[in-house]
Image (cartoon, rainbow, N blue to C red; front, side):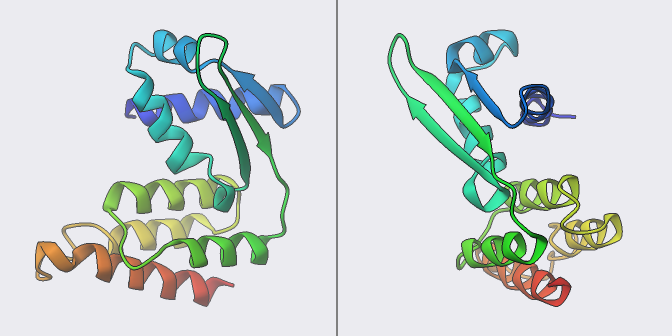
Length: 149
């Protein structure tokens, strides 16, 4: 499990304990996980975005904070939001983060998550030129998720 996964798991557990609303300091998290604050930003962007069912408010500076609120939406709305947010291209790490979030939230089943991760892997896309893999990955992800709605 990578550092991003550890940070995301900690935040999710803390959110559950806090009944869906959590306020954190970026510097405290970075210190706790022995990483740079930009790593916290990466986790917030990839794991706690609106399409993943979260509202993140941030204030920078000495007394700055991150407030994360879990928003409950129905499965089709969540999936359509993710489908619409994918864009023209997506890197493997971002795609995997989205799949993990959808599986964690039970918006997709374990088997669908495994299929998505296999289909979007660099091994599966090895015959596709590297410059086009993000675009192909986005198309595949969108089509599989559309099928699950």
